Length: 482
Image (cartoon, rainbow, N blue to C red; front, side, top):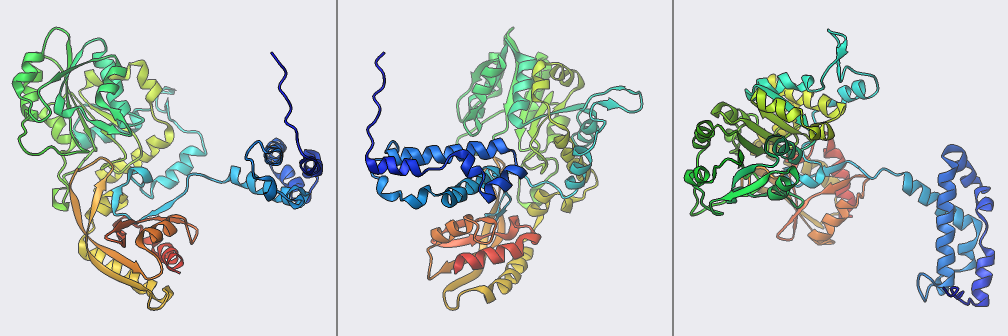
């Protein structure tokens, strides 16, 4: 193999390269010496080498053909390089996961972490995370226990199920259930329920990974009970019903009722599994959300119900599997269950959330509190917010008003269902609505604000803004409007 030809460099380039100090010389600079004492020295060395390699590449033109004119001897001096290395070290160590203010009115905003957790979770996290716990230890018997026990009774009381276990998300709950109960056999599903759960994950693909064979029946808009009956054969292991919580099919549609499918399941002695997705534990009709509850499915006779912990339930990310003891025991024994199980912090958060449900302490669960807010309450908050905001606004440049609007449950729950709200609409002489949205998102006052743009107006919905965040929002908005 011929040796690689070395790129010829000019005298000017050679002079700039000679001016670059060594890593050891740079680490002797005051700020970098202090960083090396305070942090892992290897990190500072690695970043310094990255900065110097980048500078050499720019000088020799390997990164671009016209960068030499931008590089002066000043860029090669120790003070400038020290500044760049320090900034890069700080950037590497900076937190990437940050709190934001959600002013969109979307309660379960998938991109913003879905359900915010109850405040009561914080002391539980501190207690459980910083000490040892009885996660898998039976204190009474003095022997190894199961982590399921910490949430099982709470879940069975709230859902009416005989048993319940928890894995790390809703898709995992479906995956391990299918793998345990139907691997190598067929699972009958209506074509109208072959949904995409989110981020490209689809029911057929999850089923394929479980080792179960998909048996599609009916059509996209119409599936009859006879379609299920005719598809049952010696290979059938499960009937699967998927609640379409992230879309709505209207028009010329038909599907068997839950009661009919339960009756068929009993006649054929084939378990019925239902994926409810959103995990609604209480009836929310009076608040404008129509979703089936887990208890309704359990009491109807469904063998296993799977649902998420961080949607309408309002808890941590989790996939809950509730149902008949024999089926749950079978799922728990599958090797995938251990791979998909949750950690102690998820269990702690779920315990706090479920306990609030048992006590009907709705205000302790942020999602429930937000859903239950009335337009009158939101109007009062919006008017008080504007009174706080106005003194900090540029005079005669901002139009601000409270108008009727709509909030959304979001998070793949309750398609096309909205909650009546009162929202704040803002127009600025200086900035377009899109520019204002961008300025808020880029944290003008130290915290990012996520808002909506409608009809060239910036829209803020205080339903999803915590009262303790309102002063921060006032400061951010005032800074963005200047």
